[in-house]
Image 1 (cartoon, rainbow, N blue to C red):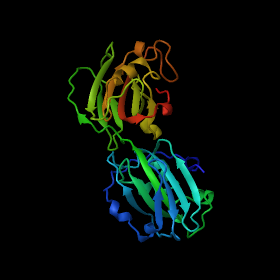
Image 2 (cartoon, rainbow, N blue to C red):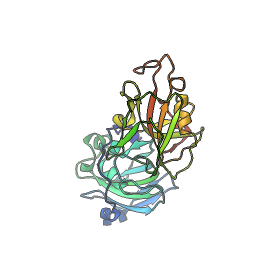
Image 3 (cartoon, rainbow, N blue to C red):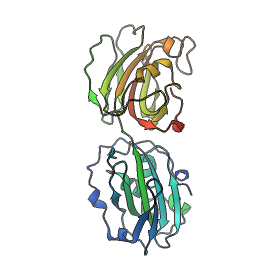
Length: 309
């Protein structure tokens, strides 16, 4: 069974980062679960009935990558889940990129296991019936009072928002950007004519890898039109990040991201000839100058790309 098929993706919440204390999840019940399998293909054996009143977990391996501190962060993991009473394997599956909030909706205990964990970790855990949705429990054939045993390999942890070093910019006539507590940008357009050529500013400079034209780049972005000052597209409002490739976006967007690093935030003012031209598209009128604020959160496998904006 695929875990991905059971979870509905909800909008990412914007709660404050957690105070990360992994020791709170310890339990003697975890001694009954023996993890196995190579990295990325976790397995487990249950040595006796596993029952817990609350979600319990411990890190078998502690990774050195980014840490999950918010439900807004995207994660990728591989997992095996077994019935804690019978030891029968119920789920064994890799997952796709999804915010932690999307998992919490149906698997609260699973999300709790990943909170404050680092990329590259293997986590063993036990989750009671009442810390997953009725739909999820029913799909796995669980009864009230039962628990599941879990081994999870946390393979990717993406940034919730750009975390780079703020940069000084003094180019006149550029839009201003204000950030909400969760990192979502607000864009203030000046009372002036837009630049006639592509104008790009690095608002935050990340220390991650440089993105290339062969990458599938995981981003948050907000786009507004200069004249209308209207948001025409925003991943922040949709509650989920997007994956883009530089050959799948308008030329100005691609040029703005060339040579940028993961963790950076980019402001780009894109003239019509590098955007949607005289024809426009959808709610964007012909001849529109576009303004984007883009947070570069990480790099996917190329096969996960989507064409935006």
